[in-house]
Length: 270
Image (cartoon, rainbow, N blue to C red):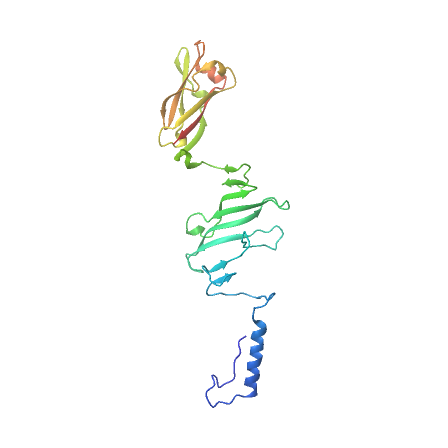
């Protein structure tokens, strides 16, 4: 702890300097010399508060923490002493200890298969709202070169659990892809030789008419038909398909139902 000099202090001209004053000065000087950190192997024990910037490898800090290293890549290391322990980098906002202090995001290391040294990185955000100021919601995970979005166990290069929207996949235009199918009970009579189905795609939420790609599926006999890939009256909420035999023999909805016929479709809006 800091030296508390004997009174009078500070000294004025004419004040006596006693032997104890001199001894206290020497002892404090020795203590400071022993406590200073300026030698290889020296260590600081306990907390350290730095009011300004901390510069490592440079004397001109450009940020609160500035690390300069001649190695490439320059490394900043965070390590847990726990067996297969995780490490994380946290991002905080607003004054420390304030009522509005919150943590927008975290990058966390993972051991996805404990004991087998299968590492990963998890990217998390807090969610939405004051009640979730320090919550953790995983948005993306990287494991073995695979990226999972809303999927903690990606098995391919990009593994997305949910709808995908992109602005660049088709000629740098935004697009939306949805899939679905009709039901075998949806077929209706068109005429003696043909049937039709109105396919409802409203659940896809298309805002304009997409490009529909269709095929007739079933348990049998549909190979002998025509029309399964011909789309009529396309709308954002659906389209119509007409089916008939290639030889134009009679066809009724009951036959389509008995053979489990349905339309599988893909809709692409761009």
